[in-house]
Structure formats: C-alpha cells, structure tokens
Image 1 (cartoon, rainbow, N blue to C red):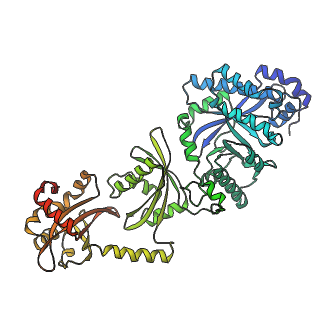
Image 2: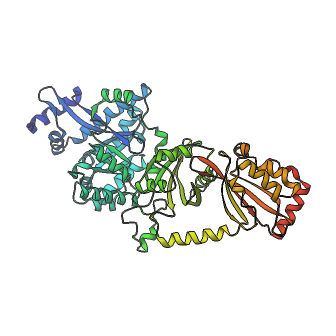
Image 3: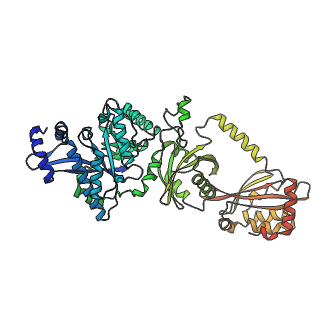
Length: 559
C-alpha cells in the first residue's frame, strides 16, 4: 500500500493545485431504465510528478486535518465548470455534475457563496451541480445544517446523501433532513447474497416511501445491475459501466459512447417515473399519510403484483420494465413473450386496439388509475393503467394485469364462470365466425331455433342460406352486404370501431318476423381476427324507434 508523509502532502498541495496536478476525474451515472448517461460524479485525483498517482484516501484526511479541504473542493468545482463549458462548445449534450463537500468546508468559508461565485465566473447554472454530502457532516448541530441545506435548495442545487449505510446514524439523518437522492454504496455489502438483496430491497422500499430518488454506486457486475434494476433503483454508477477518467478522456467518452446522454429537458419526466415503487403491493396507487396514520402497514411485504412501465410516443409503445408477475400474466392471456405483446400492441389493426387506446387516453387525461376489463385470445382479464409522467412528446404508463384463471383462487373462477353464463343468457343468439378462413367456428348459444346446419357450411354459403331462411325479405340484401366475409376486415378498419351494430328482422319460433339488435364484434383469437355475431331482443321503446328509423333513414345502415 502506498505511504506518503502527510507533511509532503501539505507542503506540495498549493503548488499542485496551481500546476494542475490535482484535478477532477469523472465517473458517469446511468439511468437504469434507459441505460443513458444522466449525470456524472467528479472525483479528486492527484497525479504527483514525484510519487505518482495519490489515492484520495491518502490526501483527503490530511487536507481536512490542516483545514485545506475547501480549497480542494473549490478547485474540483472549477475543473467541473471548465469541462462543462468544453462540452457546450463542442455541442455535446449537457448533464449535471455532482461534487462532494466536506463537513469542514462549512467551517472555513461560506460555501454556498463561494460555489455561486465560481459558477457565475464560468457562466454555469446551479442546476448543473449536485451537492453530495456524507452523513458525518450532519452528526450534530442539526438546525445549523438544515438551514444550510435549505439555502442550497433555494439556490437551485440538488442534494444527495452520499454513502448511505456506511455510518451509524443514517436513519436519524434521513428523518432530520430533506435529500433529493439517496446514494447507496454497494461496497458496504461485500456480496450480493440473499441477505444483501433483502437489505437493498428494504432500503429501496423505504426511499420510495419517503419520496427520495435512488442511486447505487460501486456497481461492478451484471448481476448487481440486474438486481438493482428489478427492485427499482433509478440510477447506477460503477466500473460495470465506466471507470473514472480525466476531463479530456471524459469528453472523448461522451463523443464515442453508445450509451448516449439523457436530454436535460427530460429530468422532471424521469424523476416522476422514479417515484413509482416497484416493491409496493399496490404500485399504481400512491402510499398516503392516512395509511400510515391508520396503522395500515400492508405495503411492507414482498411484492408479487404484476407491474410494467410502458412508454408511449405518438402511437408507438415501448416496454422499459416489467416484473416476473407481469410476464406470467401476459402468458396467461396468450402472449409468448414481452416482445410478442409489444409487437401486438403496436399493431393498430388488432381487434382490441381501440379499447386499449381509449383506456390509455383516459389514463393520460385524468392522471388516475384506470381499471377496465378486456378480452384477448378468449381470456378475460382486468388491466390497470396510470400515467406517471408526461413530457417532451411522450408519456410513461405504469400498468398491471389481473387474470382470471391459472393461480387465481377457485372461488373467483367459479363466480366468474357463473356470471359469465348469466351474461350470455341475455342474448338470443351467439355465433363465432372466422372470415379469413371462411368458416363458422361455432354456434355458442341460441334461443331462436335456427337451423343447426349453418356451422357445417362455408361461411359465405352459410350467410346466404341464413338470410334466405331466417331474415325478412326486405332486410336480406342489407344483411348479406353487412356480413360479406371478404370485405369485413377492411370495412371495420375504415369505421374506426371494433364492432358493427344494426337492426334486422329475424324469424321467431312463431314464424313471424321481429326486429332485433345485431352486433358483429371483432376479437383477436390466435393469429386471426374472429367475430362474435350476436342477436338480442329489444325493449318495446327501442323496438318502435328502430322500426321507424330503418324505414325513414335506410342510408344510415349502408356499410
């Protein structure tokens, strides 16, 4: 281990600053969901011409001991400003820089004033700087430091609590101060075993519950990255993505990196997304103070609620995150994979697209949790959506899915089956047809006594024979045109709806003709669109209105 006499450090520090031997090295911070650079931390490095690269562990404590640390921190800030303006001159995307401050900085000078003057000299905004503070800064004199931090906040600076978990009073500090970001040092967990995972998940759950954003530093492996992503950690920093590098190398890194830099205009958008708690049993609903005050601590348990984050830009959607429970839900409703679901959602011709799109629109418009039932691939399920962020032409939706079947308890299944049958009984006739393959799939239910032979015939022949035998003569031509298989898909697409609805006169068991409501509803079953053909008796009022309207306005029934 390198050993340097502290007097050498003190004697050479001022000249090292003047000659540029002490400078900032930069390590990027990555947005977990997008894997784009969202900020960078500036770290002090001393490249001495005599003894080589000095570890910060060697000189930081010495500089604090001799009350020189504020000069180091302001020199690092000056380096940051130079790099920031170089990026600006080169037309590179700008992002915030974070700088570490020492407890002793506040004893030596008015640190807020000194920082503000440095930024003003270089024409760098305060929003470009994040202040990182370790808990040791705040171990005593709470009121004094709370005033200081409030002043920094008022001046536009974000404040990070650095090295969470490495000290003895982290929870007290979180209780007494308001931080924007909780920064977790992965090094305090020497492995990523089950105990470590439980501790990290608990910390993440706590941070989200009190409204703090989360950043993990010291991330070195893909396993760590994947786990942190799955528990909702918003930002990552460590050797897995990049080692610290000097200003020139960092500027080159930004120019060459495939990761890309997050648009600063989207900072509020991503902060809003970051507020959702992946580990909550009800992630779409905000945890309220009323829940805490009433003693409702149900949120403190392992989450198995299906959750996905879906970003929509125009009509295009992209899934940025989903947990295992959500994937299982997708498979229950007939999707082979997440990619299969996204591909289908982006297919605007899918039978259920209008309903899904309407739910998304309502979510965006109201900002509330929207809960609706849907039918895909013959499976009924409940879909929940909430718009959690909006900006820059895109929206982020949190989504959850509740299926009926599989691992749902038997009583729920029995009730669903019972009331589904009761619902079917409200119709007089239900058949399922497949125009693509020109077949009648099945006659599901009928009270009207129609001939049993229609399902055995090709669909186009069955339509003509059905019209001849079951539809009043003055409605037959219109019925055949409305049911014509080869053009049905295109006609429905042009209508912008997933169903047609018309009244026709059908033969009843008495041999008389009665006007009844008819719907042709498009649903998705496997790879082909299929249609539910239903007939339903009208109320007396609707019966009279339909008779009158069909007679006086036949043009409304041409499609």
